[in-house]
Image (cartoon, rainbow, N blue to C red):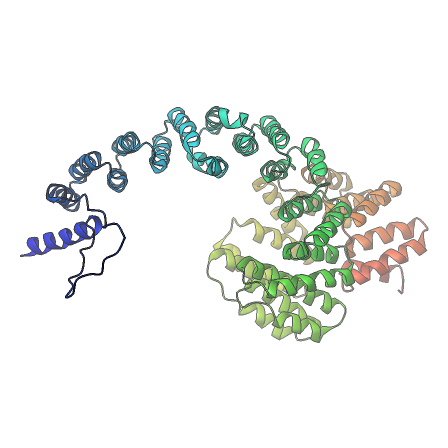
Length: 581
């Protein structure tokens, strides 16, 4: 009974998939129309029985037999759907060779069907037959309609990403795209793909050359410029002039924004500002341009201009339904709240935070709310806001611990911060973010030996990370001890991050401690120009004061107060020199 019921069910599934629906019964003659009669189904009794037996074999645990039967039916009917079913059955059975056999039969029987090419290419790559996959790629691109070729070429790096030997993959793809590289309609896309493959293979010089070739093939194509941006940090000498030249003309707003972000990272903030101003003027409805411009202005202390840009972003983002726009909206609103808070406009800051979307990052939002409550003197409420953050995974739990510790550290509750971190590190003793925060807490507690031990361990774990080197070097310089060693540590950090203003500040501070005032002044002025910061202002002002330039020192300290009036280093420095702003 069960067998016949199962057979009837499978029969109904096969029939519904392949037979044309019957014409409903009518009580009156159907009106005459000029439409052609519906096409007759290819499913006759013999084919129905063959498909039924194939599917029964699959369901009863004999996928190999089922595959053979379905493939035979596909060959007889030349039906693409049956060929695809045969390929899928072979893949489900983990038989790559059978899947390839079916896909090649599909291609032979229905040569105009481009889906067969896609299967052949992916199966060959899964079988690690890279050279054959290259040949299949060449055929696949050539047989596509001209309008679809560039999109297909752009997707090639993703298709070949599974190949372990990146150099072989790059060589194969460049060979397969030989014809596309020579055609004016596809050259830019093809060179971009070749460049991406060379970049992933670590062949920087070849990636740079591919970028130049793509740019030469079509100066209006965005692909080569996107590739150039991805190579800009690794090959600044070659890519910076190319990008600068391209940005003189009209480009897509995303590209100009990407270039501005690159300049910010160098850091070349003045040039970045120019690009962002042009972006705002040329694409006033591009919300991200206003956001990045506003955040950069905020970072450089130009709060009035920053507020204007961020307000514009909020207006555009609130009118958009795009999910990414909502992420930017949350960032802009929290930045506006922070600026209002710094200017003492606490009720305005609360209004900005009230508009933050419900799905915003809960840890960032809680941190901003706690900061606002702290400024109002509502310390326990601030502590509770941070303690009540809900986390869904280990990463979020770590971030919660870090923001709690930072708040405790900034509010002089150092023993509580130490206890919190100790508990977290019993569960994650290898977490380098927790270790970094622990080092900072230890320094504040004047547990310098424990701090140094943690930082030395961080240097071993992350030898390419400059921050542990800088932290220990700065601590030694600030305590005016082991200054030669401090300089060595900070110099090592600067080699790893030559454009980091905070590390430049550390080197300037150790030079000052060593009595090298001219060097200290030059380093600190450079650092403060690159990144206006209250702590850097404290150091620069002290150097100027000691060198007899007291008026200039006062101006720098006042500027530092505008950036962060409660910075401990700045407040202590002005108090020590009895300077009253």
